Length: 623
Image (cartoon, rainbow, N blue to C red):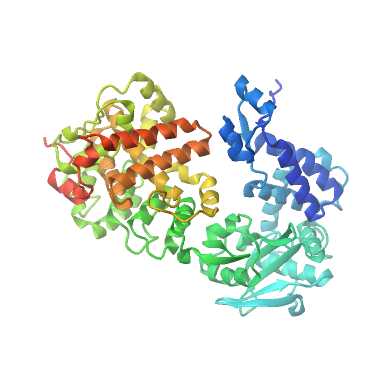
């Protein structure tokens, strides 16, 4: 049976994508066969298969993506017809350019092969698979062959803490031999030639030609023994030198200890940053200073909002944070960081959150490691021996949770529980029901409606036979914020903004998304308990820890509510959803705070303390 081909996607800026591919190809002086392949096969792949797209469902979406005030008639006609969804692809998306660079490298290496003149027969999938096999083969051959380094092939650029950065400035066989030397030690494709004895063909040919034609500049971090540790490449882009790649051994991100060396090079050469993921992962940030760009380490970044965005997108940067306060640790946890082992003083509630998410994992050593850390930062929460406790629960509430106490929460009203229950009150208010935080019951009040339940069950993947797995996933990812993985997080925060005011604060997308996530997670949790899908024991643990997250990360109730409303608007915008939903949340926030008996007015911001909430009324039932 023949497979049915996937339907073509409706990309509103297909012409601009094709034009951008052609412009970059002309700038690189690509061979005519490579340029034609990019204009056909690569273009078709980008239109039909590139994953990072934005849905366009409104005129406002057109204006945001295209930057033109009035959409053309064909767009309005399609919008009115409500047919197949329309999408937008950023022609300069760094992942799209990365794939394009791979393909240029692949085909350039085959210009002198038997495939020359037959590139049009090769599909994108075949080229991508062959490129991957080439790189796997290169690693297997990394110990075969060696070419000596030639001092006259290198020009020192700048001395660094671990040696010096040199530029490969030779031509001919001398340049090719230096490329082979770099590639031999670094185990990447820079100097991998098809004819190793003559240093011709293959990927090395691509880079050698690029250097000789003045389109590529290559730099190498060499130690006192001339051993390479980092390779940096620049490409000529629109008449300027732009940063292309920063690679450690085997094409990985360089070791963090070399970040200061790379920083020295970049501030000596001052290339333009075009959104290098290598740079972000290494913890180096480009900042515009007048007509030039300057590079700073993540730890020295003064723009708090941009630091938050980078930490949310690249949580491993927590280890480089100069002052990893509770907010930084919660944000890194939201992005997927382990936290324990990455900071000198883990924040107790953050460790407890990790513990609670992993409560049902089978790996006892991991739980024991978390337990040991939590006992150090908050010893009254846990009893000493994880493996020895087999009878009635003792010690802290989270210990009892992890040992599978399974008892229902004691229904005792305290200000701390009321405070935790009030976190999602705004969302209940928007539904037209009272969140009922005053009574101290975890389960959401009645009256939320079957339609809402159907929507939430669909979102969480709750269905017959899959309920337990869906609830387990909800708990195990409770404090992870998926919105932080969106590419717009870092991109949007790089844009210059006007000076902030109290009425119009400086945009801080990561903080706002964290607020929206915290509010919505408590909302979902209370609904799941009301629908008998989530046990109250685990529900209380997650709810109280989420309340502590809110308390640690925001200044007061109005600050939290405003941030959550902005976070909701940001996520709707990035998802291409209707803007009126964000406006409804903003209006509901204002009306809610104006209510005479508003829970946020009744409960002072300082009225919640996690340690007291646990100590006052342990969350377990006696026999």
